[in-house]
Image (spheres, rainbow, N blue to C red):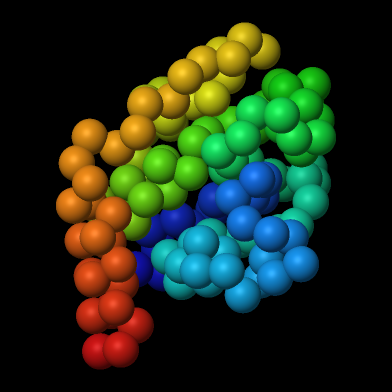
Length: 123
């Protein structure tokens, strides 16, 4: 599982409170799957994961035009697949224009992810 998100540099925005960022399960699971996670966008950032389109980090990423701006559902799908999900299906912006990111089709996927991760972590 440590190689699933190898070479992925993630920043979160609007997903959880920043005060407890490093303790949030999104952050911890991303690291568990091999991602490098940071609080701020850097020149190494490859993916900005969010769910709210009106954050300063998203505006910065749009200007930089090199970072995948994707909905948090991409992360859930990546965990579920044990492989990187297709960013095209989860993009929040295309050429700077807002795009609606549909919710996951199956609600059980989220529950299943937690169950599988529980088994992995406490194995």
